[in-house]
Length: 191
Image (cartoon, rainbow, N blue to C red):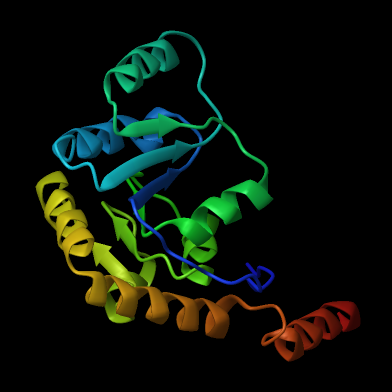
């Protein structure tokens, strides 16, 4: 997939924002992001934000009840892509708690905006690990440690954010990849 390049200035101001973006459903394990927010409830310098289409029925009701009890967590519901990108531009960390998926488009959106990724399970071809774009935690306990480490280490967080943007521009920028797409398109037309 290819995304337009982020052209607006990227400015990260405090508090530290930890973002979760996905549709609310069991596969995405939103409750684990709430568990994560819970681990930081004593820390006023960190806020947790959830974005995504709500589920229905009992599942959503249970989650919302829990959200209301977490003073450091805000649920914004479904947002238009521009608003998601604005949020990402101001965010310091992106957390993914999905059980499994391919390369989530949200990873690329985050990387374009210098946001390191802490992913519980998903790291296709070890791209996060190999390119130092954040952490592939593998367990909830490790995810808490990884998030805490990046909150406390501004320098590492900044370096990973820079790596993430460079990686996204190299791999997913439509302008850099036009020759390949032209070739692909022409190949398709000829067949």
